[in-house]
Image 1: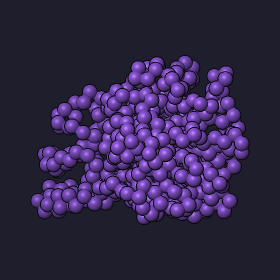
Image 2 (image 1 turned 120 degrees about the horizontal axis):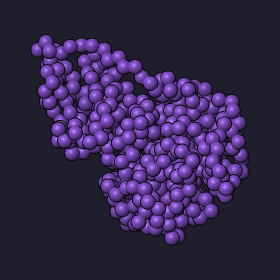
Image 3 (image 1 turned 180 degrees about the vertical axis):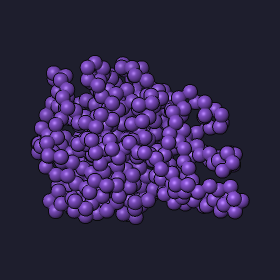
Length: 438
């Protein structure tokens, strides 16, 4: 998904000269479903047509070998270039601009504005929350923090749904300021400590801080530009990030699931410095010392309060842990590889998940938002046993992306249902939270 913002810039640069067509050749079984694809198009605000290539017919015809792949077709319908992997906007622009000039000089370029009827603009207005990405519940303060990702804002409510604050203008952008003028772009993970609410502002490639006392939003990490190279420890405000997806706080350190670099990062909040904490940047699944381990798009974090940071690697459909000690290791609890996924409870390597995106830790258990299986599962880290809790029977979830446990209840970001669910861990009852005041 990291290529999408780069393509968006290109579409905006050449609205009459360039047509972008998306072809979705799914890796995961759940992604082959057209309704799931439709929700993804809406969630990521894709503004060009996308075809569901579930049988890999287009993939094979064009001899694609990697996600993403870009194919460049001239005005006469001829394939003239191909690129595999990520591509910066600047590189795309420097390649496309001369082609436009060339075909315009030949007289074969036909300028015409692209006008698509976008369903997303209508759908987002229909829901109190749109594609909520993460939630954080705190029983002590009776507070529920919601990343209202599709509305580009953060909502703060009581645990029973009385809305107290709405933070963000509600339009995508990157602007610091007060609750009404600040802007986010697809905010995801949330963590709170000492009156400060930290937000993984994914599409802005930044970490934002909401001062709950002064009611001001500031940027504490990231430049607003996507990182295109590996980074070392440095000043948080001067270091570009790449799709930060979740945050967690432990002992004055802000841990970041840096999905775009396949790493975990850590930020010293007081010093204002950050850098890689775990993962060498190669996309795979291998355990070992923190900076030698290989990760694959970590998107969810949960701290156990005793030196262990649990995380989900979405692309390997795994749940793993990293010791917060500098000499610690990364260990895998469940999950075996990039192309090993499914829906099977069990123990250890017998377990199959499908693109999990969220975690919560409570009372010695790890709760997993098994997103593409539309389920919530419980993992016992001591035995590595996984059991499905919600989503198998009458409770219909649709790609839940986050969960948080407080006071014996689990609060679930039911992303594609545009809802927050509340599940009683004792009775198993699940209700939809009514948010009053939005």
